[in-house]
Length: 191
Image 1: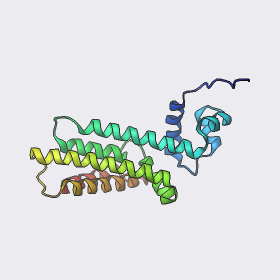
Image 2: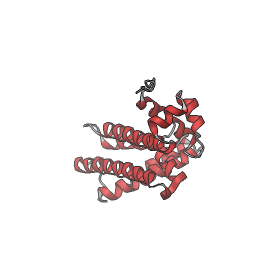
Image 3: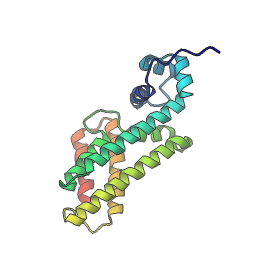
Image 4: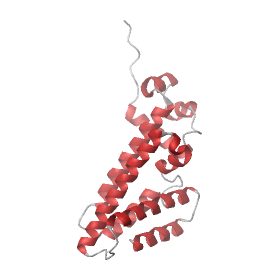
């Protein structure tokens, strides 16, 4: 029995590169040929390793989500004041000033909607984790007296998540980063 040629690439590196392509172009506009060209692998390897463009897309979304959650947890933890950490986390999640791609998950939900259950599931999971991280940070801020609002932390966390999602869409549409920062600051002050 003959063995196939060994893989000459790391699947995780390919997923990371695919993440960038999908983020830049969106799912529908990314063709298998785009992926082959940008990832530096053959079409056979693409399909043998990742099954389909959609499966690779789902893996990229999950990788993006895991990176976002890890960065958010790292950014919100620590003894320093909560509000500056929340502000920076919100800016980072929305992509303000870093690029004009918006959030890959928000873009994917906007592009594919609830018609794609796997995208909707990844998005819901990410949004739930972001909201939980925001709620935890707000609770710490309330306990220390830094956040004086009597509004329930869960309500504030949901409002901050909505502000981040909106700012992400606005960032992708080319809105001025200074305007987006003011919007996020207003949401944060209302928490």
